[in-house]
Length: 292
Picture 1 (spheres, one colour):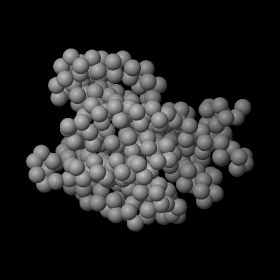
Picture 2 (cartoon, one colour):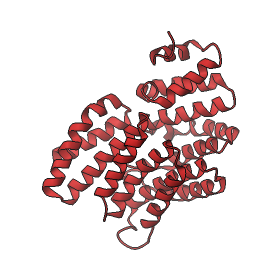
Picture 3 (cartoon, one colour):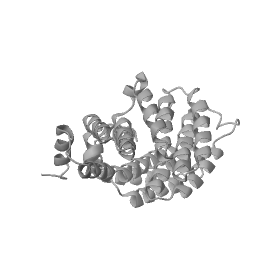
Picture 4 (cartoon, one colour):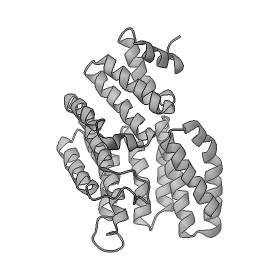
């Protein structure tokens, strides 16, 4: 089991570094081996590893534009974790992302809020500090879903709740690998503002966020994905130069985040339609096959 745990841990690191080709090569064998171990033993450690493997699978599938398959993988993780509310709740995070990508934000909200409430209690075992990052991550996903439903009040309330949790979180204690922190909340405030149409608020917030020291400590996957969202926000206000700069920054941080994601290709295509591109953006468009 130790060898499998090491492989799952390596898969998480591969995801954090946005090495999606490497992850796609490793996942089929990893899923098969962890499934076999789970079938053979059925103990808690094997269950946890299998849920993690499905979560990683769901997350990368959503990244690569296969949200329907990502939904299935996350749903499988939840089924395996049934009876263990925190473990099941950890699978709700990629499930909610898949649902939002499929333009079903109300379903995402209906999944995240009950999951957060189920693990919100001052009674053991859900009063442990390691539950806090999980609750916070679920609230952030709920805020994104509320913003996609055009519920500005709900989104801001959920973000405020998440911020209260983030202020108490020890970022060295994250057993469910949620990556939840004060800077994650700050980034979510920016992206939800953009989703709600408050573009100038989002851009102002973005300038502040990237000045934080914690910004550089985020995994490159998180930073690059966020920069892709910011590029879309700049496009909405017609600032093509800033949108192009954000894409180039994302590509420098994590090339696969830009070169393999359909969402990034859409932004690049929109930039091309806007007229002549700066040299670095034009080179990026050629690299992804959008121009010759």
